[in-house]
Length: 232
Image (cartoon, rainbow, N blue to C red):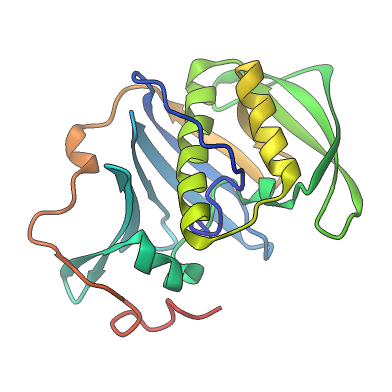
């Protein structure tokens, strides 16, 4: 779920002023269900949407996060503080795979190279403990491409904001992994078969993509209008 830790990492990364682009992501969520999502970002603005929820998208701007939905042809907006109460069914998280990393045992580069979304990356082997302290091993593809690292930073920023609003305690390993990627200037292109960047474009999206829709109205709670949003 997009709102169940958009990047499952507690590191609040400031975005570079020039960071901008669009990416398409795919993978499976923590229930094993396939998902796809698009992310547009520019500076501290971010827009995330999923074809699984075509009438809803997330918008992060001005230090606030909004959900924009269409109800009976009318666009309505809810701020994240209220949104977190009904977050369960909005859309899948593009990087939910990181949430399972409770503790890092090792992260080692291999000699293998892999091209993902047109970007050259190196295959790393991550050994970690999950939430049940079971040891697991997964392949990651990491890239020093600015487009990849900026995308990761943008997603982590949103994830941190939402996690803070939800009062979520994030795994230490996820925090450590995000910090290591930042320190090494790397971006995540693939996490095993759970997450993959399918396409990335470093051209800035139109500024209008980050505006709240004109004529929309804001509601304190969408649960009454959108049945099922509050379910777990």
